[in-house]
Image (cartoon, rainbow, N blue to C red):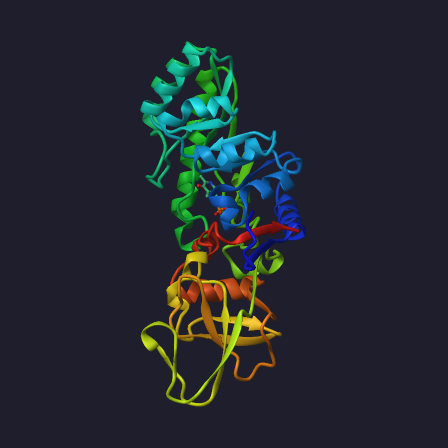
Length: 365
Ligand SMILES: *Cc1c(COP(=O)(O)O)cnc(C)c1O
């Protein structure tokens, strides 16, 4: 039982708002896949999936065990495992997860398992590389894939998909259009020779924002669901889902010349009131936020982080803030604060969110 006082509140209404925001950008029959990998972008993939179960068509996770956790919680919605490995395939079938097969090694291994079990029309997904050069078959692999598929009824291709390399970057417009066109060509080849028509999908959040025409049959929404549109205008339309809160554990009054924290990194120039908060780099706050690069909110006022961030604590300057031990501390509760943390941490919001560690208690409300 996690009773850490540092709590990440996941805002269910905000999740719904964001889901509906993307829905209204799409054709009514376009399916929605909610990406809940990496613990729902640092929240709680299981709670988010339970909450969205009857509101989306698909879920995606990166790894098999993430999908198993969602199945074990009773969620019945189809779950695509984006990056399975051969040793996971038995567990994938056992939990009725749907594998992405991205090269011949895993494709053949899955077909062998499907043949031996035997499975009937087991849903699989085939990923094509159209320029990201990360995971996926090349278009030149199509004839071999199709000839293998034609000889089996143990599996059925549920979808063909690809992933954009720079959908958020308008400067890369031509590259992205080329990826989309390549994918459309691959799908056409597949349809011509396979004998049935699997679903197609290529867009992530910023793909939906910038290239909605390429929505095909389904879109994969990750960061957008959690309140970020990869674009200021879009983000303004979305609601923040991740609210990280804690409390003041202790207050100290420090005299000029005294120091705060490890390595004595903060030196008081004047009488200073500091507050110690039970959240540290082991909870997901980058050490780059130390030494006044980051702040928290206490009674609606900004309190700068002083000294180095510890594993389990931060100290903040509350000299000018009316506050006491036990008062609530907001580490972030809107997109602006999260963007500021990401900037000060020299990273992107994706990493700031997914860095929130498993030690933090997660409550969907
Ligand atoms: C993570 C991921 C997504 C979601 O991307 P967002 O930018 O968060 O919407 C979609 N598709 C694939 C293949 C991914 O790995």
